[in-house]
Image (cartoon, rainbow, N blue to C red):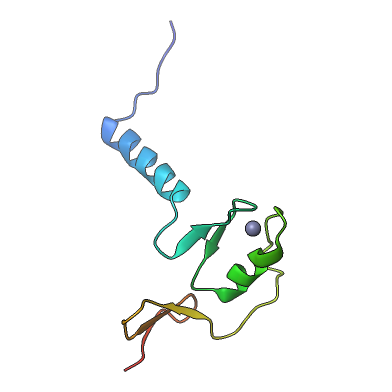
Amino acid sequence: MKKYNMKPIEDLMESAINRLKKLLPSDHNMKCRSCGQIMDLRDLSQVFAHEDCNGIPIDYKTMKQIPHSGAQKIGSPELHTKNNGVINLN
Ligand SMILES: [Zn+2]
């Protein structure tokens, strides 16, 4: 007789939600229209690297880094950076 390893439904739901979260970009991430790789908009190095990716995903570890990059919502005094968190500009 075949034995089944049963998991509680809560565990299955949580793992499904975590897998979906990995697929969906967060509000500071964007999927490149050319190669489909997710880029972090707080890191301009990644954004500019996809300017000429020609459909080939970028190796973020070896690409040229732009220091002090960040993103700011219009009208907000906060600068969102990848490495230094949120910086209040006031
Ligand atoms: Zn790309």
